[in-house]
Amino acid sequence: YNKTKEEWVPLFTDFTKLLPVFGQNYRVTVISFAEARQMAKHCKGIVINPGKEAIRLENSQIKNI
Image 1 (cartoon, rainbow, N blue to C red):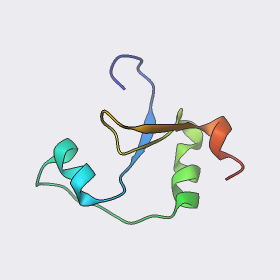
Image 2: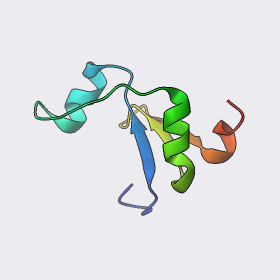
Image 3: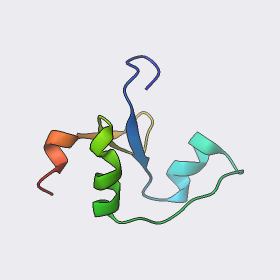
Image 4: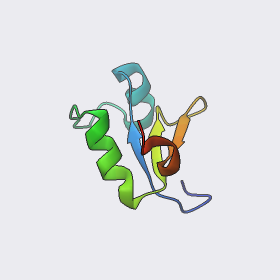
């Protein structure tokens, strides 16, 4: 996030959420939630579908999921 300078791992539920953020030129990969959680250990947490209706899960919230 530019305003707070925090680093989050972005996850998208589908292409309709991904396209407005990255446009047509992108590469994607499918990962499990466990893999995303592991990637987020060195960040603030995970943000699902970045944008107006984003769901932010801080590491303290996701460590037991």
